[in-house]
Image (cartoon, rainbow, N blue to C red):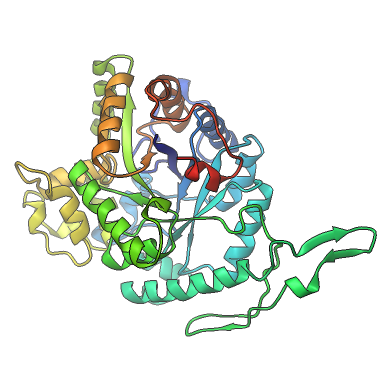
Length: 435
């Protein structure tokens, strides 16, 4: 069976640019209203999804032509609101659905991160995951008081030490420290709670954690690093990995590499769940699904795709010839993305063509057709790609998109024995360990 998650960003449109454009008569709530997100959460739980995943960032893009104009004009993952404070509003309308939150190991103090996530794990009764990121965006650094971005490898070195602080804080209370003995007037056994007195190269923390042990002990740890250093970090720490690959061959190569790396750390490869980002577009007929895809592509200006790519790569792509082969680009730090778009056989895409694809869903494959056809495609990728499931990113208005996925596609996957019909556990880690 496969694992499924719903991917979003607390912003007007996540991966498919300008997907905030939708007929007003069909729009029930807007992305900045709680009802928008509560509707999606209820739908995902009705569909028995593992979790609702939120990506995040802390600044606006301004690399393209040196300004924020296209970012603001098209709402390119901006404005972006805090997903952390959204989770309590979603947990109160669901009982089983997990929630994965992106929080930066570069900018959140480890003590504060542990405090927030452990509190949320209590409030959700064990349904929280942490997507660990090491922030790369220059404007994020400047918003948080730094002049420049911390270099790539140093960010991961800091993240290793960061994780050690977090682990020690989560372990600063024994699991049975809280006794709540009302007869004797004893809340916790003092011998089972301790300071950590951590002093490292980058972090110092006295401890203990101010939050008593939560239902999961610590949140499910999630990572999406694609670089060699990022893969090593994920192999050591992650329970779940979010991957972007465009072909089953590339998926298989990534999955085999991650599982080989995990063995080096004494981990069982099957303990790491790998989820591929995809954008299924389902219609009652094949033509209806194709029409939805065409409508999405037609509303995305080439400038929007280029501006988003420029922001992600921290490089102004307006300086380059749009009709040059994408594989010829010599831009620092994007070779992994170049490989994703050029590994397929046949004619190699130009920068113009890649910018269009990027605006329609970053590097995610689009799976188009009826529910049966999309189920066929998912089953093929699930078997040949070597992963454990998928992250679904919406191609249009979130509440309607996920409702159609749950009503049309999920029953087909369940009928084929490819997806659960009921939750068997109560906490997020149990969902992921179910199969």
